[in-house]
Amino acid sequence: MKNIIVILLCAISLGASAQVKDTTKKKLGDTIKKDILTAPDTVKRLHSKPLALIPPAILIAYGAASFEVKPIRDFDFYVQGRYRRLTPNFNTTAESYFLFTPVVMVYGLNLVGIEGKNRFVDRTAILGLSSLILGGTELGLKHATHRLRPNLADYYSFPSGHTGAAFLAAEFLAQEYGDKSPWYTVTGYTFAVTTGIFRLANRDHWFSDVVAGAGFGIISTKAAYLVYPYIRNALTHTDKQGKKFSFMPTYQDGVPGMSFAMQL
Image (cartoon, one colour):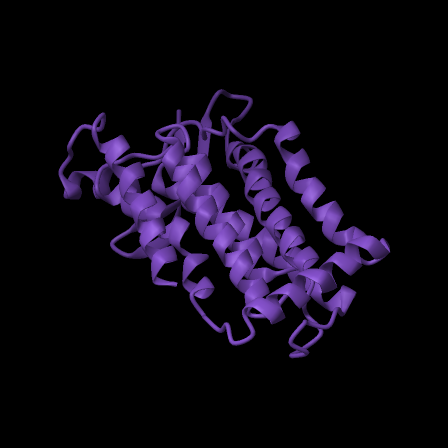
């Protein structure tokens, strides 16, 4: 366990050092003021293209197939059997912290002056949208599929919620900082994969649950980056007289809110 944490921390350090070399130092106060109190005119979504939804869709399809394809379901039992033999006493809650780490990194990096792809308002809105997509999807499926967990705790095994949240966060980090250094993407997905492995080792989920959870997490974030610009543009438009209207979320002095502006 300690070795895994050391490796992950080293990965974070390497990624951060690679970025800091070509980043201008800024005062923390100026960074926070610029990032929280302003929003860009456009939302960058370079990595979110329709074709990018195919890989996570394949992961989801694999998980869904476990309900009908016997060899896939048999592999679930095989994997759990191996974990029971190799790690019969394994028990950890580390994955409950790992799944939040990529999100913490996104906001932490920005606070120290390493700017991501989007500003605070848009980044937070995208994260919230992706969480809504994932939460609604997984909650419905857990009740609809009614699959028993390997540890017999309950019938909410499919898909893995922890794994979904971890991969959502990993993709969020990749979207915001993947262009800065590949180490950010590697680090985020390392935490996500480790989360999935721990869910298996704790016997909380079957292998197909974890695979599907990963797919749902990734596709939720990618979909949010695709959809959010249209939502944002719908809130900022020009009427027939050429007047520009803007209706945007704000965050000031610790209080969230909405702002309305009109340019004549």
